[in-house]
Image 1 (cartoon, rainbow, N blue to C red):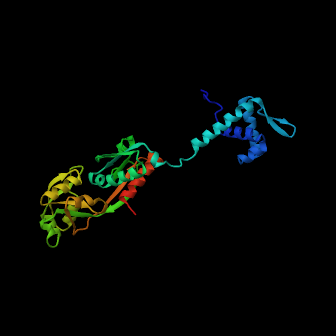
Image 2 (cartoon, rainbow, N blue to C red):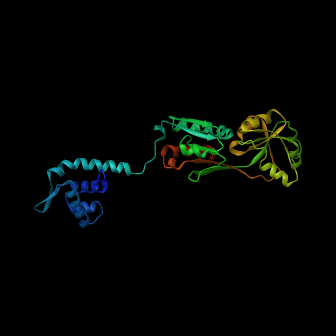
Image 3 (tube, rainbow, N blue to C red):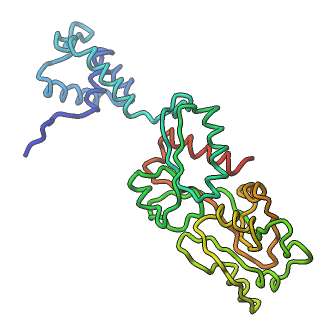
Length: 302
């Protein structure tokens, strides 16, 4: 089956514009940085395609045919549109954005991120709105399907094509209410293990890195509750004599707001890395680039 557009070639449009503008094979070749011989072959092809001589000799110069005269402005307009189509984006003006971004984040990350991100949007991109969704077990499909623009948190379940950027690395502390017995004296592994604990797990797991570290010391702890988010766990710790693990640094403000004391854990625990993940179709999008830059500025200030 033949193509519906047998003669479609963007290079021919560019060459036609150069030839009709310069009215010279030599000058058109110089303009397009090719050889006069190559440009002569292109002119011959254009003549076959358009079934018109286009440029004909008149003494020492070439003059356009009536068909060429009629095509001159249209050819120039087509080339301008091609240049606009195939020129890399120069970015976007954040002030001109009218867009809602959907971010998936853990409750503690959302609480730390939202105020700063909305403040930046208010100052730089007042047409931007933010929708924050709770974490899912598997965020990959949401990113792939476009239901989520950005996932922010501990990224450990991505698809191969997903782009991931680390933002901050935080250490964990033991969060307890003011006046908790652990705030008096030296916090030892044995005293930490003897206290009642609340853990945070999207999957409802009772154990984690702290249990592995305690087991190295021949110790174990009692977990009385598993909650899906840090804010609920910290609220429980603020109201009673239970211990919860709290990320420090950029995510620690909520603990101080609740009046929790953060105690250094006397055991080696792996750090918590907070990153952001997005689908590659958004990598070059100017609006999404602004969003990612704003997240960096909030969670990773200079």
